[in-house]
Image (cartoon, rainbow, N blue to C red; front, side, top):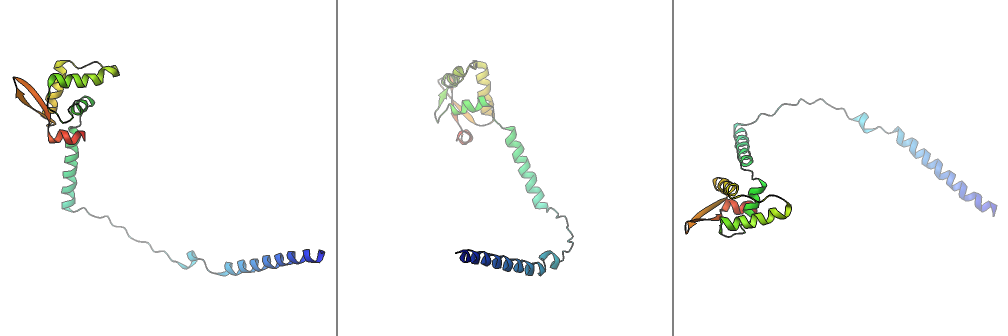
Length: 148
């Protein structure tokens, strides 16, 4: 029985020595960094074409225009109160102020409200018609795109 136990250990020793010999052979092979010779490459700056400059300027101007037309939270709230309808000033005021009062925000006064609506009209988000001597407000295409 002892003789059987010795044989597996001999096999392990032989396997280890074979492995060590393979490792020694691998060490003799050249490494890739010894074979490859790196060359210095000159880097040139790429020049911008005239058309690309014009395109960049146009995009900058467009982004600047969009930033100047950013809406305040109050203006967005007013736009969202429309929901594709035509509304009188009093109805818009009721809807918008119903959103503000539960949040503890003071409701709009009529003068403030009219200033906000005039600002939205100037920015072309809403427009109005006159019906029975009162203004009826509605969303323009730009306003509809904004709230979608």
